Image (cartoon, rainbow, N blue to C red; front, side):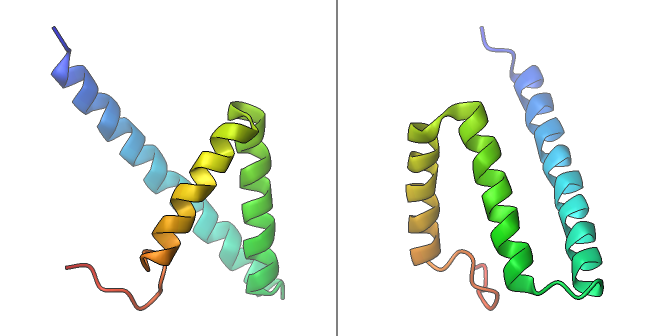
Length: 86
């Protein structure tokens, strides 16, 4: 039998961690911008740092699979700043 309550709790914990991580990233981003670092530099270094850590944790093949998924999401417009959710 699957522990549904445990799975739901774990999902809630992961969602909370993602929210806190987003807040940390937003704060670091704002600090960088206020220090005069261009958005393009902040974005590229954030992506490079994330990819390096993901490769360390999961290996290149898994990261390549993730990158293909991200590519599809980008093509579908998921990351457009003007996108509307229906």
